[in-house]
Length: 229
Length: 229
DNA sequence: TTATTTAATTGCAAATAACAAATATTTGAT
DNA sequence: ATCAAATATTTGTTATTTGCAATTAAATAA
Image (cartoon, rainbow over all chains, first blue to last red; front, side, top):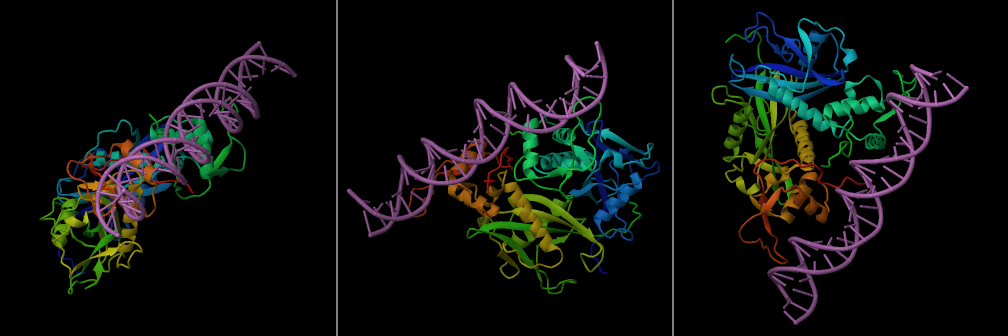
């Protein structure tokens, strides 16, 4: 293998989002106390590409996520790549940022001392260019929420319509109209009724249970949110 | 500078699009006859990150584009990053792909022997993962065309409404309704009348000249294309 | 002058969305 | 049991937006 040029340091960083207590939250990890750069600082989880272990960039991301949480993400998408001389004091470095969504209940093996869920709004202060990465992630997630099934990956496999509408509202950071939301979701055929009991959580009529009609991300022809005013 | 891990080869590749003869076209470059991999093959223009010359990934892209064409792009946006063991026979490699738009008349210094404009539809056969990159570029450009001023970066600084509609149709690969297009463009305030003479090209009423109301990309609230049927 | 060509505007029916209200189904209190 | 309260779900009604077609405008060419 011939390579005429020296290569930059290559890492991945992941913006992991979940819905906890009705609020969109972000996973932060504390860097090792003996890290060469920013020891003990809270940052996005990330790590070097291990050319021996990882066959692809996604492998790196999934390995990092497993290491920090012991689980698997429900949705993973590449965000953007930052590369420059000055983003890391060690010199020319490149980081491929990813967006991951995971339902709260699927993350069980969290090391409470070294990892933490923090609200994404307002965006916390973060070192390096991690704040820019989080901003990009929120824009992406908000953009796709408007015309896809993306927010549903923050929910359990079966969910109610009020739950579904709540995730959309949390992600879009905007109130939605009930009847319009239901009509559109129905038209898109994005969900189907799930077998089994209904959800009763206290008073009121119990909501029917649904699940995604397809396991992959679905794009709609039209937009879900109100574009007026 | 300490670095515990060996790093992959890092390159950038650019999908440069222009509108030529009313058709969306893609810039291809012929690899050197003595290249270690795929000598003489037509590929996307690209090159290694030069850690000494380039301060950022965009620097690399702009340097590559200048080298091939002698000009500057009108619009540049990062697309996606491919990284794996098997995309290049030389081993673990990573390529950051970019999308660039340029109006035809601004590219003058083309080396006809080593560079070539080819129609993007149907997508030409390309080595490595360049075909996947082009597919991504087309999806991105099509997606953004539906709700932004992006296609206008394929036009000269001043243009007519029929010209503007033609680029949108070329990029979207879809016919648009005249009156709806004009209504929406006007509502968005995306363009303003340009001073100076009108464009008369032969018979028929001459069209008025317009220019973008802002030099940067503008997002619309609504979608430009017909979503029916 | 008049036909032809392309640009630009206008009117109207059909589709869609926002808003408001009504109905349904449950739990919990009397 | 019955009724009130709570939440889910559906149904109208009106205003906005869109798609389509026709009309008007301004130029060239015969």
